[in-house]
Image 1: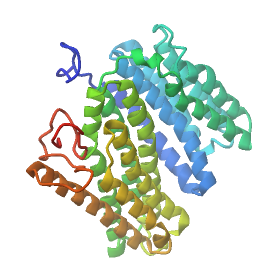
Image 2: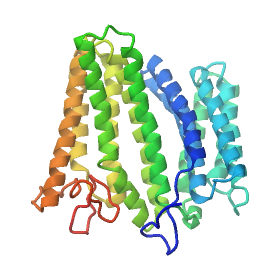
Image 3: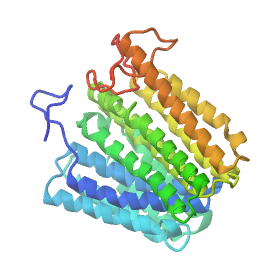
Image 4: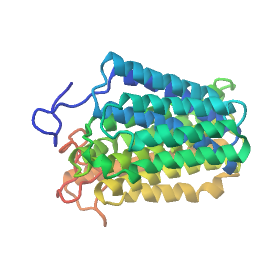
Length: 409
């Protein structure tokens, strides 16, 4: 299975992601594409809310499958078939997304309830499992989703939003019951990192699918390059400056349950949602460099990027009670630019956002090097790690560990 993990009992081994889980993720590649398509067609406030309401159940099915795979050995025929059954239900939900608020609402709701029933069945041997998040999914939010599929209009939206709220609040409501759950610290960060990577892949699809139909003159190629730089900048912020820190935090935490709930289940909902918004924004701008963005596209592109960076402020505080100064400043700058870029040509807006993200990553890398060299930092301490490639106690780049006297890589 792997090497022992720091903070685990002697003899414990690192849990690895199984091939069945990776295959299961392919369903959600398609699901994210479907949600992106829904947002592409309706990206005003009402459209964004509707896209979010269908995204949360899809995301929560993935989370439920990931958590049960984390706390148990699922590398066996019974559990593989169970994971694939959830995948089939997720595929039905993804197929229903374009018509979720029309004729396919029942398919979406029924697919969700089926997924939650399968997940409860996989864990039914665990004592009291129905009195927790899995029971809420199967006995409360699942029926609400099905009922929503049977009605129309705002009533459907309201029932589905209520179901999403029930699911999202369940880990908090049953916090004490979940205290006894033993989580594998390495598996969870890897799974959520892979899911974010799936969402980032949608940004590449958004760029390429539209640009492939264009003439690809110099301006269009410049827009594509700027859009790809934005996607790379988002990747860099997570996988260079945060991913290992998240693994370190869950490994050494007194309460892994709280870190997993706050940083992974909730924090990554915002991160993935933000990346989807940016992906749709990139798809609408990269192929037509001289069009003006307009409020909707600018809100997706710049608003999504701002939310992404602000979420790191939230996760850093939840992990280490420290402020992610550079990312918060960059997020404020990105959001402050929104009124300016609404009337800019797409190529200008893309280049400007790419420049902000490149500058942010350069600043963080400079702070990394200064911290490694022992040079003094400004108020609040460095946000970067020590020497690149030299992890300290499993901590991640971009995240200082308070109280250690040093900044790990």
